[in-house]
Image (cartoon, rainbow, N blue to C red; front, top):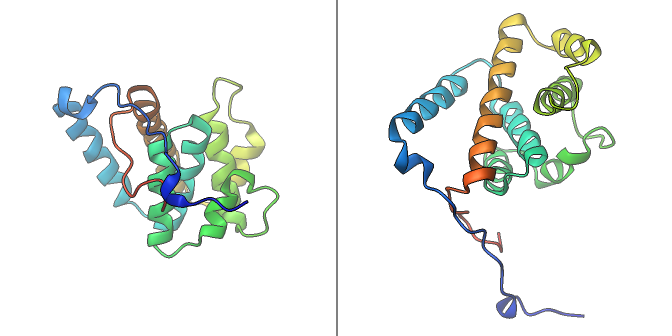
Length: 163
């Protein structure tokens, strides 16, 4: 069956609350925190993987869209982005990336259980203490962005559904 793309009507998520506009000082501080994390020593492709995986878990459509596109724009591949949700089974991730993704999942799912020592120790084996500190901060930051995006839906998706 062939579908004409012009006849498809996409459903756009409804914005709920313009949190940035209504609390500009907090938004400014959050953007400053994001900028500080970006200036750290973690490599950009790894940061995008972390952001994408946490965003998938948290169900933030805006962040999943943005971080997958940002990763590809930064040189990563759509194949890897499509497989982030099943990274354990996919052969396209390094040991360092796997350790970061495992820690991302554990920190993001704190309500389920504490971060296991095995996950922490594996991350510590692949990252210096400074990098590990930055990794934990980055995971915390993206989780806050996700909660803003999933709860308030304050931002429009850019690029459209066809991208």
